[in-house]
Length: 102
Image (cartoon, rainbow, N blue to C red; front, side, top):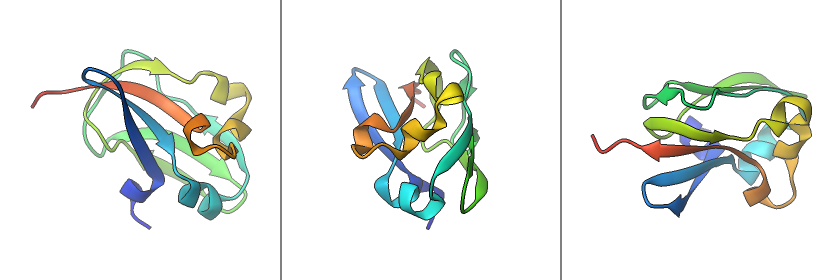
């Protein structure tokens, strides 16, 4: 599975995309036990590490599928990493990014 298959993205406002973990990624990783969340305001380049996940089946850094600035981060993941195992894929969100025009 490629890194791009791990994320879903959704437009939530003009130039803002929400990034979350796909159901396929949840199944591949198993129960998520730890998430190293990114920092709001951080500039992301395409394929730059976005989040590190420790789960029952693997430990992995996942690269950002988009370039831009993180404008909102799901900081609840730090204390509740199991949120990324949400039954509703849309609840398994990581961050919102203002995409770059370039």
